Image 1 (cartoon, helix red, strand yellow):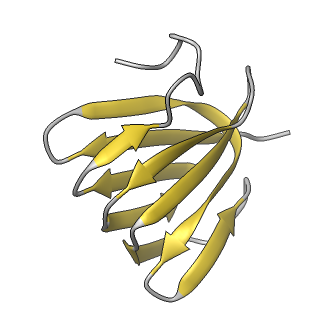
Image 2 (cartoon, one colour):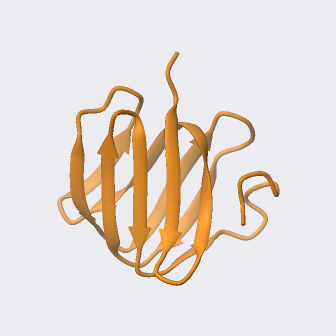
Image 3 (tube, rainbow, N blue to C red):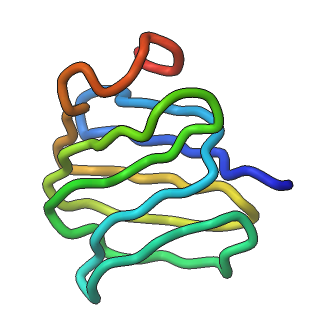
Length: 96
């Protein structure tokens, strides 16, 4: 089964990157869920929580405050104005 390669960055820092099976968040058009094989997409990211299901480890959330959401060829890139991992949500793997 294919995975998503996910990268989340904020305007002033790197947040997280790694392989995931699902990404869920909010765009200006409403809630969106991304699974492997999703059609290409470029959307305005709305403020709220992103939910990430990494290949290894438990699901976690990232609190974002607007930005852009891009999907192409199983690669998801999220560029947020600001982003913060929810405390205690992820092990140290993939976090910088």
